[in-house]
Length: 118
Image 1 (spheres, one colour):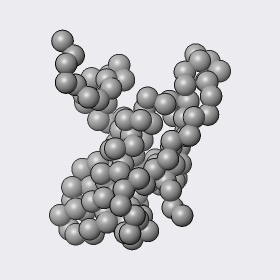
Image 2 (cartoon, one colour; image 1 turned 90 degrees about the vertical axis):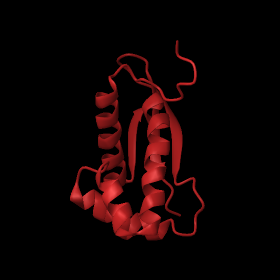
Image 3 (cartoon, one colour; image 1 turned 180 degrees about the vertical axis):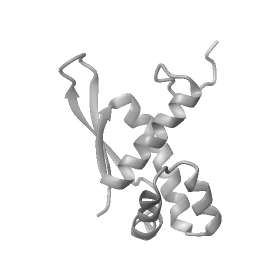
């Protein structure tokens, strides 16, 4: 039974799902906005927002915890040097999801997830 299981499976095993979220989070941090399916964007939002909340503290412990999920050193540096201070006064809600319609090939709902920097 699927009772009390909050996250989407995205038709992947748990290891594949975690790798997908890590890659999407790294891309979002590097580029500021990405376009993906709506389900992936909705799963990515709390994942990235927890990373940004850790980056707001700026401690070594937070950097090591975030390093488990951000693959590239440049993305981790940007997370702690730019995004953390930029969101220092904002109490959550660091991302926005905009629906962009259906994908042409299979009709999947697409969405654009972006960081709210202003």
